Image (cartoon, rainbow, N blue to C red; front, side):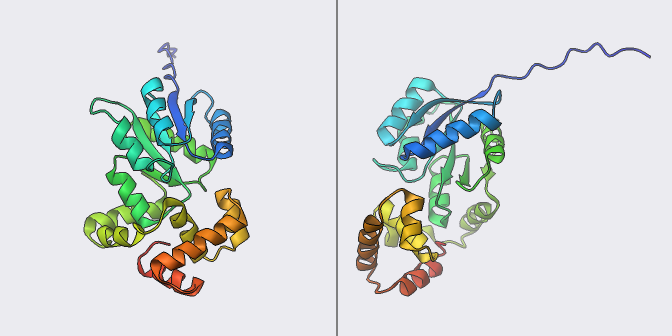
Length: 228
């Protein structure tokens, strides 16, 4: 029997990643998870907490992939891509967000992201998603892929949804979605790393701006617009 002397293929360099999220504890958690599950495959080379920091981090590190939150101080994830992505840049963007609302998914993909996954993703799946995006694949959580297909098929009228949501700040949108899904104020506060009092203030503002009078009306409003 002839012995196979073909040399094994050496593993390539790790995918270089910048993590962009306005919550320091979340960034630290992602860094730790990627270091554990992605050892040798993924390397976090930088972090950022807002749009300006993100643009600077992309320019400084030239990462392969940016893990990008959708809602950020200074303009959001789409603004990061608009300002940081030069035409010749090889950097790719993967949205990693608490939001799974249709208009966030579609708007972020239209802004230039190669994929969109939610923060419920496992560490192993996140490593795989980062690696696939680095290779040029488009990656979505299963439910979110349907939003993109529906949008291009014309089933979701994004413009009309945006006109309503333009009245709300980014934080108010996050609070609105969680409350409309039935979260208690304490649960919203824990999810968004804010106080219960701040949740109450945002909720009052949301109801006033949308001219609604109750959580029940808010849930119906959000359901009709396929925001949940």
